[in-house]
Amino acid sequence: MRERDAVAVDGRSEREEGPRTRGQKALAFVKSHGIEIAFGVGCLVLTVVCVKQGRTIEVQRRLIKKKDALLSAKDWRIGDLTELCAEKDRCHLELASAALRDGCSEGGRTLANYRTTSMVNSKPREVE
Image (tube, rainbow, N blue to C red; front, top):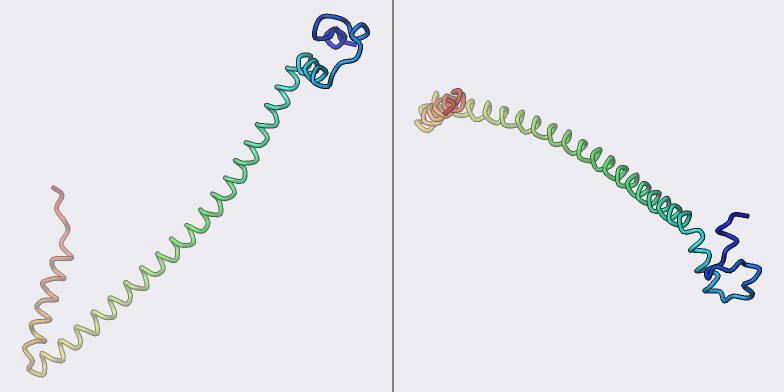
């Protein structure tokens, strides 16, 4: 038996002590095993923190997968809209060209406006 287990709270040995109350026994146990109790509590807290972080990492991984899926869907939609805009521009220019051939001045104005805006949009921007 270890020395600290044999000595009671008030310094008497356990054989000399006699009956004790439950609270006194608990206090004596805590005093004699304080380091082990603190170590056990520390291990328990560390385990809970690690499990919580593991769950948080799993949630973050799922969110990253969802974000990647949304970004790829967005990229696909941007490409689709770009194709639709190009198709719309082709149809619009064909209609304006046909209107100009038929003698409508609005067709000529539309083509001139398209040429002006396409030149402005295709110019490289100057760095200030």
